[in-house]
Image 1 (cartoon, rainbow, N blue to C red):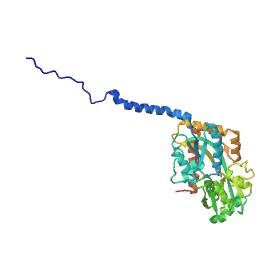
Image 2: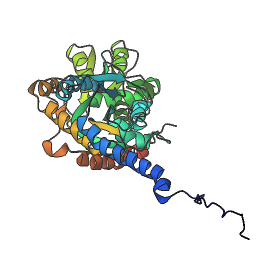
Image 3: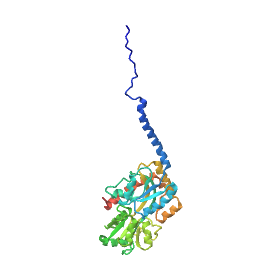
Image 4: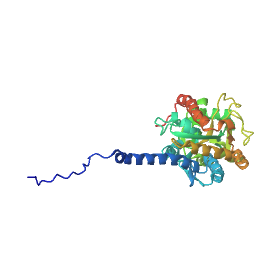
Length: 348
């Protein structure tokens, strides 16, 4: 008798494990997205800028750095094909504005017009700087150097440096000097000058060089070490007294004003410089694009003329590369560390 039991049907066994093709699919998708992003980054850099860019000026409007930035911004906008927006972000000797750029997205849409104060002197002056000037930025281009001039209120009983030194030594306890802010190049030039002539004078910080000069004209402070851009018009108008130029050479803007060294203060020199910096990590293609655009602006006759009028001297072509600026900043930080520490100047 044959069994009526039917053979059991067989069904394909479904493995609980995903097939290799399916298990790798999400990873392949992620890898594809990563490759797409990597491929699009250079393209975005090549197309930069696709919208307006912001130049942060870390000092008040109307000052020397602000004037320089606006001269450059107008021509840069034409070259880049996008508007360059100026934003003045003052405070902490320029560190507030520079810090904002250091922490900005590294996409090329924000850069700072730095100075010897923001990217050299403040590293030693402040006990806790907001950033490392040598490592927290992408250096773009060194632009110009500008002399400083020591000016006094017009009724101060001194008309040259030897007379000023004699007066300051007798009256230092009741004197005041102003600057564009604590830690600014203006302040440190006066700090070094005071140390060199052996006086201790009260410092009055302002939110920019222009407000300091206005108070000097009004006689509220006794003297200031100002960028020549800000001081020259007041000297020429007889509203303040020009005491000395703090560089080795006289300025064509104030050719009759002798240098400190000419007036017996040997080896004394203080000046400021300006350069563009982007956030660390900004694509090299963008850095190089802004570098090239800035150099083109610097080579424009009208820009050269306007910068000359404000006392700025454009740096030589061999000093305009990002690599040069990076090394220059490191050397400037080291250069100023000794004199600042020796002067005893310090900010918490």
